[in-house]
View 1 (cartoon, one colour):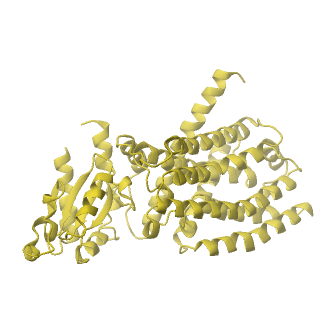
View 2: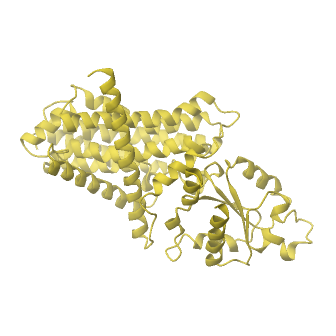
View 3: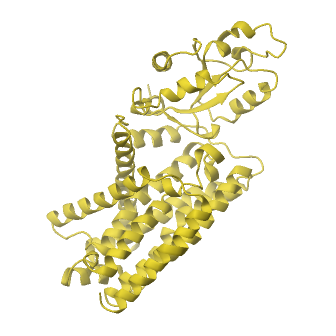
Length: 138
Length: 308
Protein backbone atom coordinates (compact mmCIF):
# COMPACT_ATOMS: atom_id res chain seq x y z
CA UNK A 1 0.00 0.00 0.00
CA UNK A 2 1.50 3.29 -1.10
CA UNK A 3 1.52 6.63 0.63
CA UNK A 4 -1.34 7.74 -1.60
CA UNK A 5 -3.78 5.10 -0.35
CA UNK A 6 -2.62 5.50 3.25
CA UNK A 7 -3.21 9.25 3.17
CA UNK A 8 -6.57 8.79 1.47
CA UNK A 9 -7.74 6.40 4.16
CA UNK A 10 -6.68 8.79 6.91
CA UNK A 11 -8.45 11.77 5.42
CA UNK A 12 -11.81 11.04 3.82
CA UNK A 13 -13.64 14.22 2.91
CA UNK A 14 -17.32 13.61 2.50
CA UNK A 15 -19.76 15.33 0.19
CA UNK A 16 -23.37 14.66 0.93
CA UNK A 17 -25.54 14.16 -2.15
CA UNK A 18 -29.25 14.44 -1.38
CA UNK A 19 -30.93 12.50 -4.19
CA UNK A 20 -34.56 13.08 -3.15
CA UNK A 21 -34.23 11.77 0.42
CA UNK A 22 -36.86 12.14 3.16
CA UNK A 23 -34.20 13.84 5.36
CA UNK A 24 -34.11 11.01 7.86
CA UNK A 25 -30.77 9.57 6.71
CA UNK A 26 -29.37 13.08 6.37
CA UNK A 27 -30.00 13.75 10.04
CA UNK A 28 -28.33 10.46 10.94
CA UNK A 29 -25.30 11.48 8.85
CA UNK A 30 -25.06 14.75 10.78
CA UNK A 31 -25.32 12.70 13.98
CA UNK A 32 -21.99 11.11 13.08
CA UNK A 33 -20.33 14.52 13.54
CA UNK A 34 -21.75 15.12 17.01
CA UNK A 35 -19.71 14.65 20.21
CA UNK A 36 -21.13 11.17 20.76
CA UNK A 37 -19.71 9.74 17.53
CA UNK A 38 -17.23 12.41 16.31
CA UNK A 39 -15.95 10.96 13.03
CA UNK A 40 -13.45 13.82 12.76
CA UNK A 41 -11.35 11.53 14.98
CA UNK A 42 -10.71 9.56 11.79
CA UNK A 43 -10.09 12.64 9.69
CA UNK A 44 -13.53 12.65 8.10
CA UNK A 45 -15.14 16.02 7.53
CA UNK A 46 -18.12 17.21 5.53
CA UNK A 47 -17.11 19.51 2.67
CA UNK A 48 -19.23 21.95 0.72
CA UNK A 49 -18.10 21.22 -2.81
CA UNK A 50 -17.84 17.90 -4.72
CA UNK A 51 -14.46 19.08 -6.05
CA UNK A 52 -13.05 18.70 -2.52
CA UNK A 53 -14.65 15.33 -1.86
CA UNK A 54 -13.29 11.77 -1.64
CA UNK A 55 -16.55 10.17 -0.62
CA UNK A 56 -20.02 10.77 -2.02
CA UNK A 57 -22.69 9.87 0.51
CA UNK A 58 -25.89 9.46 -1.47
CA UNK A 59 -29.27 9.38 0.27
CA UNK A 60 -32.71 9.00 -1.31
CA UNK A 61 -34.25 6.93 -4.10
CA UNK A 62 -32.79 9.05 -6.94
CA UNK A 63 -35.91 10.23 -8.77
CA UNK A 64 -36.13 11.23 -12.42
CA UNK A 65 -35.50 14.86 -11.62
CA UNK A 66 -32.13 14.33 -9.97
CA UNK A 67 -30.60 11.54 -12.09
CA UNK A 68 -28.69 14.06 -14.14
CA UNK A 69 -27.55 15.93 -11.05
CA UNK A 70 -26.25 12.77 -9.40
CA UNK A 71 -24.34 11.87 -12.55
CA UNK A 72 -22.92 15.41 -12.82
CA UNK A 73 -21.80 15.45 -9.21
CA UNK A 74 -20.12 12.08 -9.71
CA UNK A 75 -18.28 13.40 -12.77
CA UNK A 76 -17.31 16.59 -10.93
CA UNK A 77 -15.65 14.66 -8.12
CA UNK A 78 -11.91 14.21 -8.61
CA UNK A 79 -10.88 10.56 -8.71
CA UNK A 80 -10.11 8.41 -6.78
CA UNK A 81 -13.47 8.73 -5.09
CA UNK A 82 -15.87 6.24 -3.52
CA UNK A 83 -19.66 6.22 -3.52
CA UNK A 84 -21.61 5.18 -0.45
CA UNK A 85 -25.35 4.48 -0.60
CA UNK A 86 -26.82 5.45 2.79
CA UNK A 87 -30.27 4.14 3.68
CA UNK A 88 -32.54 1.55 2.12
CA UNK A 89 -33.73 3.88 -0.67
CA UNK A 90 -30.50 4.19 -2.69
CA UNK A 91 -29.69 0.53 -1.91
CA UNK A 92 -32.89 -1.00 -3.30
CA UNK A 93 -35.68 1.53 -3.68
CA UNK A 94 -37.80 -0.36 -1.12
CA UNK A 95 -41.45 0.67 -1.22
CA UNK A 96 -40.82 3.25 -3.92
CA UNK A 97 -39.48 0.66 -6.36
CA UNK A 98 -42.65 0.67 -8.52
CA UNK A 99 -43.12 4.43 -8.41
CA UNK A 100 -43.48 6.31 -11.72
CA UNK A 101 -40.81 8.72 -10.52
CA UNK A 102 -38.22 6.09 -9.55
CA UNK A 103 -35.00 6.21 -11.54
CA UNK A 104 -32.79 4.32 -9.08
CA UNK A 105 -31.68 2.40 -7.20
CA UNK A 106 -28.37 4.21 -7.12
CA UNK A 107 -26.27 1.43 -8.66
CA UNK A 108 -28.22 1.70 -11.89
CA UNK A 109 -26.88 5.24 -12.25
CA UNK A 110 -23.35 5.40 -10.83
CA UNK A 111 -21.01 2.67 -9.51
CA UNK A 112 -21.55 2.12 -5.77
CA UNK A 113 -18.73 0.91 -3.49
CA UNK A 114 -20.63 0.21 -0.32
CA UNK A 115 -24.27 -0.15 0.75
CA UNK A 116 -25.50 0.89 4.20
CA UNK A 117 -29.16 -0.21 4.43
CA UNK A 118 -31.54 0.94 7.14
CA UNK A 119 -34.46 3.32 7.40
CA UNK A 120 -32.61 5.29 8.57
CA UNK A 121 -29.32 3.49 9.41
CA UNK A 122 -28.09 4.32 12.90
CA UNK A 123 -24.88 6.36 13.14
CA UNK A 124 -23.21 3.17 14.41
CA UNK A 125 -24.26 1.44 11.20
CA UNK A 126 -22.89 4.27 9.07
CA UNK A 127 -19.57 4.18 10.93
CA UNK A 128 -19.46 0.39 10.60
CA UNK A 129 -20.10 0.79 6.88
CA UNK A 130 -17.26 3.28 6.51
CA UNK A 131 -15.00 0.95 8.53
CA UNK A 132 -15.72 -1.93 6.14
CA UNK A 133 -15.10 0.49 3.26
CA UNK A 134 -11.64 1.18 4.69
CA UNK A 135 -11.11 -2.61 4.93
CA UNK A 136 -12.10 -2.91 1.28
CA UNK A 137 -9.72 -0.16 0.22
CA UNK A 138 -6.81 -2.12 1.62
CA UNK B 1 24.02 37.12 0.88
CA UNK B 2 24.72 35.12 -2.27
CA UNK B 3 22.21 33.22 -4.34
CA UNK B 4 22.84 29.77 -2.87
CA UNK B 5 22.45 30.85 0.74
CA UNK B 6 19.36 32.90 -0.16
CA UNK B 7 17.83 29.81 -1.76
CA UNK B 8 18.69 27.72 1.27
CA UNK B 9 17.13 30.38 3.46
CA UNK B 10 13.93 30.31 1.38
CA UNK B 11 13.69 26.52 1.55
CA UNK B 12 14.24 26.43 5.30
CA UNK B 13 11.72 29.24 5.79
CA UNK B 14 9.19 27.30 3.74
CA UNK B 15 9.75 24.01 5.57
CA UNK B 16 9.65 25.67 8.98
CA UNK B 17 6.52 27.74 8.26
CA UNK B 18 4.73 24.82 6.61
CA UNK B 19 5.45 22.41 9.46
CA UNK B 20 4.60 24.96 12.13
CA UNK B 21 1.49 26.01 10.22
CA UNK B 22 0.16 22.48 9.75
CA UNK B 23 0.74 21.73 13.43
CA UNK B 24 -0.95 25.02 14.39
CA UNK B 25 -3.93 24.09 12.21
CA UNK B 26 -4.11 20.78 14.01
CA UNK B 27 -4.08 22.65 17.31
CA UNK B 28 -6.96 24.74 16.01
CA UNK B 29 -8.98 21.65 15.07
CA UNK B 30 -8.14 19.89 18.33
CA UNK B 31 -9.04 22.83 20.55
CA UNK B 32 -12.25 23.33 18.58
CA UNK B 33 -13.10 19.66 19.06
CA UNK B 34 -12.37 19.75 22.78
CA UNK B 35 -14.50 22.88 23.21
CA UNK B 36 -17.36 20.97 21.58
CA UNK B 37 -16.78 17.95 23.83
CA UNK B 38 -15.39 15.92 20.94
CA UNK B 39 -12.08 14.05 20.72
CA UNK B 40 -10.73 15.66 17.57
CA UNK B 41 -8.28 14.49 14.91
CA UNK B 42 -4.77 13.10 15.56
CA UNK B 43 -1.75 15.42 15.30
CA UNK B 44 -0.77 14.31 11.80
CA UNK B 45 -4.23 15.01 10.38
CA UNK B 46 -3.30 18.07 8.32
CA UNK B 47 -0.21 16.34 6.91
CA UNK B 48 -2.41 13.42 5.85
CA UNK B 49 -4.90 15.82 4.26
CA UNK B 50 -2.14 17.46 2.27
CA UNK B 51 -0.64 14.14 1.16
CA UNK B 52 -4.07 12.93 0.11
CA UNK B 53 -4.80 16.09 -1.88
CA UNK B 54 -1.43 15.69 -3.62
CA UNK B 55 -2.52 12.24 -4.81
CA UNK B 56 -5.89 13.35 -6.15
CA UNK B 57 -6.91 14.26 -9.66
CA UNK B 58 -6.63 17.97 -10.55
CA UNK B 59 -9.66 19.28 -12.43
CA UNK B 60 -9.52 22.60 -14.27
CA UNK B 61 -12.92 24.01 -15.27
CA UNK B 62 -13.33 24.36 -19.03
CA UNK B 63 -14.28 28.02 -19.03
CA UNK B 64 -11.71 29.11 -16.48
CA UNK B 65 -8.66 31.21 -17.17
CA UNK B 66 -6.17 28.37 -17.01
CA UNK B 67 -3.01 30.27 -16.17
CA UNK B 68 -4.53 32.34 -13.36
CA UNK B 69 -6.37 29.31 -12.02
CA UNK B 70 -3.14 27.32 -11.77
CA UNK B 71 -0.91 30.19 -10.58
CA UNK B 72 -3.12 31.52 -7.75
CA UNK B 73 -2.44 28.73 -5.20
CA UNK B 74 1.29 28.97 -5.87
CA UNK B 75 1.11 32.73 -5.29
CA UNK B 76 -0.49 32.14 -1.91
CA UNK B 77 2.25 29.79 -0.73
CA UNK B 78 5.02 31.96 -2.22
CA UNK B 79 3.78 35.05 -0.39
CA UNK B 80 3.68 33.19 2.89
CA UNK B 81 7.18 31.78 2.33
CA UNK B 82 8.52 35.28 1.73
CA UNK B 83 6.84 36.48 4.92
CA UNK B 84 8.31 33.59 6.90
CA UNK B 85 11.77 34.30 5.48
CA UNK B 86 11.64 37.97 6.42
CA UNK B 87 10.45 37.13 9.93
CA UNK B 88 13.22 34.57 10.36
CA UNK B 89 15.86 37.08 9.23
CA UNK B 90 14.49 39.80 11.49
CA UNK B 91 13.88 37.66 14.57
CA UNK B 92 16.86 35.34 14.20
CA UNK B 93 19.64 37.58 12.94
CA UNK B 94 18.23 41.09 13.39
CA UNK B 95 18.59 41.56 9.63
CA UNK B 96 16.31 43.70 7.53
CA UNK B 97 16.01 47.14 6.02
CA UNK B 98 14.17 50.36 6.73
CA UNK B 99 10.67 49.88 5.31
CA UNK B 100 10.55 46.08 5.38
CA UNK B 101 7.45 46.21 7.54
CA UNK B 102 5.58 47.88 4.64
CA UNK B 103 6.66 45.08 2.32
CA UNK B 104 5.62 42.55 4.95
CA UNK B 105 2.13 44.01 5.26
CA UNK B 106 1.75 43.81 1.47
CA UNK B 107 2.96 40.20 1.38
CA UNK B 108 0.56 39.29 4.17
CA UNK B 109 -2.29 40.38 1.90
CA UNK B 110 -1.22 37.88 -0.79
CA UNK B 111 -3.16 34.77 0.37
CA UNK B 112 -6.57 36.52 0.33
CA UNK B 113 -5.66 38.15 -2.98
CA UNK B 114 -4.64 34.76 -4.37
CA UNK B 115 -7.97 33.30 -3.25
CA UNK B 116 -9.74 36.20 -4.98
CA UNK B 117 -7.71 35.71 -8.18
CA UNK B 118 -8.22 31.97 -8.26
CA UNK B 119 -11.90 32.19 -7.42
CA UNK B 120 -12.66 34.83 -10.02
CA UNK B 121 -10.78 32.90 -12.70
CA UNK B 122 -12.73 29.71 -12.05
CA UNK B 123 -15.92 30.79 -13.87
CA UNK B 124 -18.28 29.79 -11.07
CA UNK B 125 -21.10 31.95 -9.76
CA UNK B 126 -20.73 30.88 -6.13
CA UNK B 127 -17.00 31.46 -6.39
CA UNK B 128 -17.58 35.00 -7.65
CA UNK B 129 -19.85 35.65 -4.66
CA UNK B 130 -17.13 34.37 -2.37
CA UNK B 131 -14.54 36.53 -4.12
CA UNK B 132 -16.67 39.65 -3.76
CA UNK B 133 -16.98 39.01 -0.03
CA UNK B 134 -13.30 38.16 0.32
CA UNK B 135 -12.20 41.42 -1.31
CA UNK B 136 -14.66 43.50 0.74
CA UNK B 137 -13.35 41.85 3.87
CA UNK B 138 -9.74 42.50 2.79
CA UNK B 139 -10.50 46.18 2.22
CA UNK B 140 -12.20 46.45 5.59
CA UNK B 141 -9.63 44.81 7.85
CA UNK B 142 -6.53 46.28 6.22
CA UNK B 143 -7.42 49.76 7.54
CA UNK B 144 -7.39 49.00 11.31
CA UNK B 145 -4.47 46.60 10.71
CA UNK B 146 -2.40 49.39 9.14
CA UNK B 147 -3.35 51.71 12.03
CA UNK B 148 -2.10 49.14 14.56
CA UNK B 149 1.14 48.59 12.61
CA UNK B 150 1.73 52.35 12.31
CA UNK B 151 1.15 52.74 16.05
CA UNK B 152 3.83 50.11 16.72
CA UNK B 153 6.20 51.83 14.28
CA UNK B 154 5.68 55.22 15.94
CA UNK B 155 6.05 53.85 19.45
CA UNK B 156 9.28 52.00 18.67
CA UNK B 157 11.18 54.75 17.00
CA UNK B 158 9.73 55.94 14.72
CA UNK B 159 11.08 53.19 12.50
CA UNK B 160 9.68 50.93 9.79
CA UNK B 161 12.13 48.07 10.21
CA UNK B 162 11.12 44.83 11.94
CA UNK B 163 14.62 44.37 13.34
CA UNK B 164 14.67 47.92 14.79
CA UNK B 165 11.29 47.37 16.46
CA UNK B 166 12.68 44.19 18.01
CA UNK B 167 15.82 46.00 19.18
CA UNK B 168 13.69 48.75 20.73
CA UNK B 169 11.65 46.20 22.64
CA UNK B 170 14.83 44.51 23.85
CA UNK B 171 16.20 47.82 25.13
CA UNK B 172 13.06 48.86 26.98
CA UNK B 173 10.09 46.50 27.21
CA UNK B 174 7.63 44.85 24.83
CA UNK B 175 5.12 47.23 23.23
CA UNK B 176 2.30 45.08 24.58
CA UNK B 177 2.88 46.58 28.03
CA UNK B 178 2.03 50.08 26.86
CA UNK B 179 -1.50 51.35 26.25
CA UNK B 180 -1.04 51.90 22.49
CA UNK B 181 0.67 48.53 22.09
CA UNK B 182 -2.09 46.70 23.94
CA UNK B 183 -4.74 48.27 21.69
CA UNK B 184 -2.70 47.43 18.59
CA UNK B 185 -2.19 43.86 19.76
CA UNK B 186 -5.92 43.30 20.29
CA UNK B 187 -6.74 44.80 16.88
CA UNK B 188 -4.13 42.60 15.23
CA UNK B 189 -5.53 39.43 16.84
CA UNK B 190 -9.02 40.22 15.55
CA UNK B 191 -7.65 41.11 12.11
CA UNK B 192 -5.70 37.85 12.03
CA UNK B 193 -8.95 35.96 12.64
CA UNK B 194 -10.41 37.76 9.64
CA UNK B 195 -7.31 37.20 7.50
CA UNK B 196 -7.56 33.48 8.20
CA UNK B 197 -11.25 33.53 7.28
CA UNK B 198 -12.17 32.03 10.63
CA UNK B 199 -15.64 32.11 12.14
CA UNK B 200 -16.92 35.40 12.84
CA UNK B 201 -15.40 36.46 9.50
CA UNK B 202 -15.96 33.40 7.32
CA UNK B 203 -18.58 34.90 5.00
CA UNK B 204 -16.20 34.38 2.07
CA UNK B 205 -16.06 30.63 2.64
CA UNK B 206 -19.47 30.04 4.23
CA UNK B 207 -19.87 26.34 3.57
CA UNK B 208 -23.58 26.19 4.21
CA UNK B 209 -24.63 28.97 1.89
CA UNK B 210 -22.08 29.37 -0.92
CA UNK B 211 -20.35 25.98 -0.76
CA UNK B 212 -16.77 26.95 0.16
CA UNK B 213 -17.00 30.16 -1.87
CA UNK B 214 -13.95 31.08 -3.90
CA UNK B 215 -12.34 27.65 -3.56
CA UNK B 216 -15.37 25.76 -4.85
CA UNK B 217 -13.76 24.67 -8.16
CA UNK B 218 -10.36 23.77 -6.72
CA UNK B 219 -9.38 20.15 -6.37
CA UNK B 220 -6.27 18.05 -5.74
CA UNK B 221 -2.91 19.64 -5.08
CA UNK B 222 -4.17 23.13 -6.01
CA UNK B 223 -6.66 23.00 -3.15
CA UNK B 224 -3.87 21.55 -1.01
CA UNK B 225 -1.66 24.56 -1.76
CA UNK B 226 -4.43 26.96 -0.73
CA UNK B 227 -4.90 25.00 2.49
CA UNK B 228 -1.15 25.04 3.03
CA UNK B 229 -1.01 28.81 2.44
CA UNK B 230 -3.71 29.32 5.03
CA UNK B 231 -1.97 26.97 7.47
CA UNK B 232 1.29 28.91 7.00
CA UNK B 233 -0.62 32.11 7.75
CA UNK B 234 -1.67 30.55 11.05
CA UNK B 235 2.05 30.28 11.91
CA UNK B 236 3.36 33.46 10.27
CA UNK B 237 0.55 35.73 11.50
CA UNK B 238 0.99 34.99 15.23
CA UNK B 239 4.79 35.16 14.82
CA UNK B 240 4.42 38.62 13.24
CA UNK B 241 2.18 39.82 16.06
CA UNK B 242 4.66 38.48 18.62
CA UNK B 243 7.57 40.22 16.86
CA UNK B 244 5.66 43.47 16.55
CA UNK B 245 4.17 43.74 20.03
CA UNK B 246 5.56 41.08 22.34
CA UNK B 247 9.32 41.20 22.05
CA UNK B 248 9.71 38.45 19.44
CA UNK B 249 11.99 35.46 19.85
CA UNK B 250 15.12 35.64 22.00
CA UNK B 251 18.50 34.57 20.64
CA UNK B 252 19.02 31.92 23.35
CA UNK B 253 17.23 28.58 23.52
CA UNK B 254 15.10 29.79 26.43
CA UNK B 255 14.19 32.91 24.47
CA UNK B 256 13.20 30.86 21.45
CA UNK B 257 10.98 28.64 23.59
CA UNK B 258 9.44 31.72 25.21
CA UNK B 259 8.75 33.16 21.75
CA UNK B 260 7.19 29.88 20.69
CA UNK B 261 4.92 29.91 23.74
CA UNK B 262 3.89 33.50 23.00
CA UNK B 263 2.91 32.43 19.46
CA UNK B 264 0.88 29.59 20.98
CA UNK B 265 -0.98 32.09 23.16
CA UNK B 266 -1.90 34.13 20.07
CA UNK B 267 -3.04 31.01 18.20
CA UNK B 268 -5.20 29.96 21.16
CA UNK B 269 -6.70 33.48 21.34
CA UNK B 270 -7.63 33.29 17.65
CA UNK B 271 -9.16 29.83 18.09
CA UNK B 272 -11.17 30.99 21.09
CA UNK B 273 -12.52 33.96 19.13
CA UNK B 274 -13.42 31.53 16.36
CA UNK B 275 -15.31 29.21 18.68
CA UNK B 276 -17.27 31.76 20.67
CA UNK B 277 -18.72 33.97 17.96
CA UNK B 278 -21.46 33.53 15.36
CA UNK B 279 -20.83 34.44 11.73
CA UNK B 280 -21.12 38.14 10.86
CA UNK B 281 -22.82 39.28 7.68
CA UNK B 282 -20.49 41.14 5.33
CA UNK B 283 -22.05 44.52 6.18
CA UNK B 284 -21.67 43.84 9.89
CA UNK B 285 -18.02 42.90 9.37
CA UNK B 286 -17.44 46.11 7.40
CA UNK B 287 -19.11 48.16 10.13
CA UNK B 288 -16.98 46.50 12.79
CA UNK B 289 -13.67 47.09 11.00
CA UNK B 290 -14.30 50.54 9.55
CA UNK B 291 -16.09 51.65 12.70
CA UNK B 292 -14.93 50.64 16.13
CA UNK B 293 -11.73 48.87 15.04
CA UNK B 294 -10.47 51.82 13.00
CA UNK B 295 -11.36 54.25 15.80
CA UNK B 296 -9.38 52.04 18.19
CA UNK B 297 -6.51 51.95 15.67
CA UNK B 298 -6.43 55.74 15.33
CA UNK B 299 -6.58 56.04 19.12
CA UNK B 300 -3.58 53.76 19.44
CA UNK B 301 -1.63 55.90 16.92
CA UNK B 302 -2.48 59.04 18.92
CA UNK B 303 -1.49 57.32 22.16
CA UNK B 304 1.78 56.21 20.58
CA UNK B 305 2.46 59.79 19.40
CA UNK B 306 1.82 61.00 22.93
CA UNK B 307 4.32 58.44 24.21
CA UNK B 308 1.90 56.09 25.99
